[in-house]
Amino acid sequence: MNIGTTQSQSLINSMQFSSSTVTQSATRMQFSSSAMTQSATARKSPIGGVGSLDKVEVGTKVDGNFVNRVLQDSLEDRLNSALETAGVEMSAGELLASGMDFSPEATATRIVDFATSFYSAYQMNHESDEGGAKLEGFVTLIKGAVEEGFAGARELLGGFSEMSKEVEDDIDETFDLTMKGIDAFADEQRQLEAQAEEELQEMGAI
Image (cartoon, rainbow, N blue to C red; front, side, top):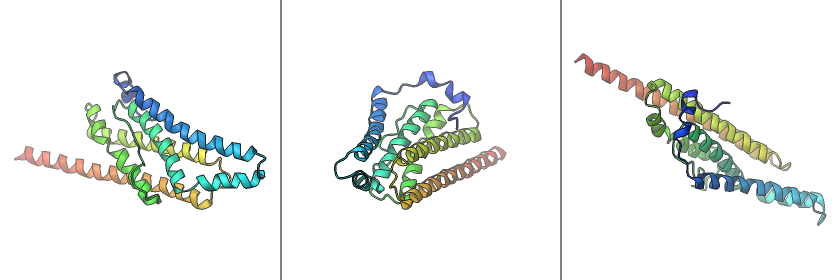
């Protein structure tokens, strides 16, 4: 999916992201790459047998905490890229770090709350757009980032052959709840904008 509109991409020259943001994003992705490298090493090691070491390595890493970490790395990277494309000078730092509840509901809520918190900044950076166009552009932007983030996380986690179906189902449910949460945010904003428009019309009729 293409993230951002032609208009938002034309603003890319005005972006001033610090080098530390890029460095932090690269460091987070190295964390996930390191986990994959360690797992691959365990599978090749002759110590204790291939099967037993592979299961130990996977069993100690593919839990709610690890899945959350991989989702965080992947989503932060995609959200940073999307925000940069839209000319929003903010960084998606430690997206899922807060809280210890790794349930699909809690994780999806954190993702939605964080991603939608950039709407005001997006609006200010797209003042020339009509109200509806701003909202639709923003929703397309963050949905695209979330879709790519989950796809990246699934690709990485798919390298673990012992990943349980429960973990896979949790990822799918988290994704579905996240998309529904973004849709709910969009519906709420549409209602607020419609209400504001009605109030302006009433004031003009007085």
